[in-house]
Image (cartoon, rainbow, N blue to C red):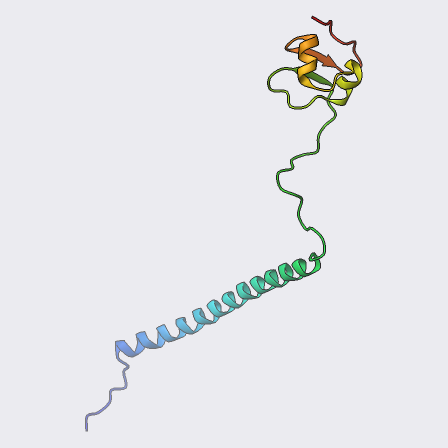
Length: 120
């Protein structure tokens, strides 16, 4: 029978060192994974609760709606104009952009609180 040497081989020393490093690293990795999973599960549960609570009513604002319309102070009757503001309708008595352009001309400027521009 061959005699065992009291000295450990290089391979055994390396294996022992690697084992301790792997053991510590795996514990840290497992802890990090469990923290990430716990956070993700919490987020999912909160989202599900929010959806369940909001079933009977709308949770979001309707699409296609930007900021609320601001009160207009000045309006120009040009090709890009979309709607006639109420203060112009009150000043002129005309309801459509076409009628206003016929009476006052293209690019007629109306300002709130100021007199109506001259008719053409």
